[in-house]
Amino acid sequence: MNDKKTILIVDDTPANVSLMNNILKDRYKTKIATSGEKALKLAQSDTPPDLILLDIMMPDMDGYEVCETLKADPQTADIPVVFLTAKVSVEDETCGLSLGAVDYITKPISPPIVLERVKNHLTLKEARDVLKHQNQILEDRVRDRTKKLGELQDVAMEAMGALAESRDPETGNHIRRTQLYVKLLAEKLCDHPRFKDFLTPEHITLLFKAAPLHDIGKVGVPDAILLKPGKLTDEEFEKMKLHTVYGRDALVAAEKKLSEPSDFLTIAKEIAYSHQEKWDGSGYPEGLAGEAIPFSARLMAIADVYDALISRRVYKPPFSHEKAVSIMTEGRGSHFDPDMLDAFLEISEECRAVAETYADSEEDVLKKQ
Image (tube, rainbow, N blue to C red; front, side, top):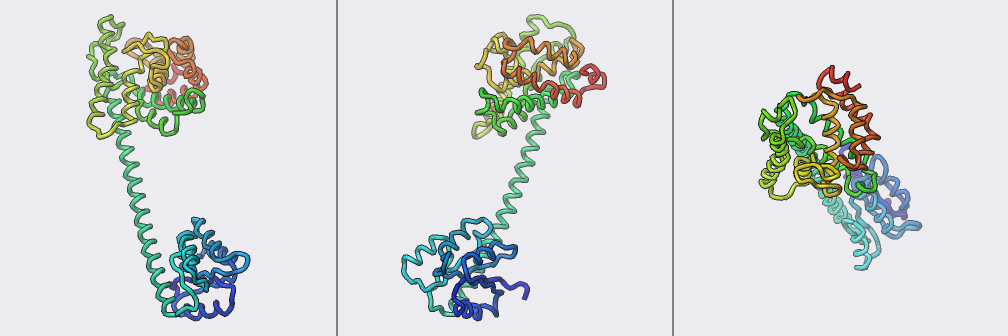
């Protein structure tokens, strides 16, 4: 019958092989190996056995070594091994079971007992295989649900950022562009001696996902200030600067609803609150300088300023890519972390490509060329 299980008999003595084959052949398919090397080849083949009956005392490679090799190989580790041997000491049996065998039968054998034990171990293996399959299905479902939840979170974060940006009708694809600039810059810096220890792929992903929230605090800025076509007064600018505080406070409030700290929200808070800080300490809201400015905020500052320069705003037309890069170069060591700015200059053409791909209008594409 095609559904018969396959038993591999491993023994270098022809009489023992013949005896075991006669006992098993009516109920199972049998394969024969008269050496450890041949047993391993059959076990590692495209049609492995369902169970192995293994003698211990064989030349060249004994049964213990065969069992140890089988259990060390993921391809064969799950095949049940039953020692069938004349070695009857407790020490021998302990050794065999410690190597991963499921049973230890001593000679002379009793055919009914061998058949019953073989049947029981095949049943156990089948149950384990079913459970393993079910666990894999559950893992796949959890992985799929986790992926979908992550996608939902990403969409929610982008929507929150877009809500803030919608206050300014001329910002368009600003969120998508700055998010991609941040990712490009972080990937460029991941081998830099100053940053490589913490710029892991996971950290870069968090930076990418948190970037859309950098201006979420704009929802708290009055339209008369946010949309003013001319230069802001000193008083208006002070109110505009509060968008960093509004954004940070909104994220702090969200974080309080969690049962444990979130790396994502930590980065989002840093970006929202500190992306207007400058390397020389002349930025806001706290006037932080140098390394005191969170890494994520320094990164966001470069992405945000570049995009602001090449984009149309109520108070200015878009600058060309070349003009924007020139202005940013002047800010090296004053506005921007010098190492980060150097990395940006090296990838500026890639940023230009992002800007052109996600331009707000055909006219702006021309301006950026």
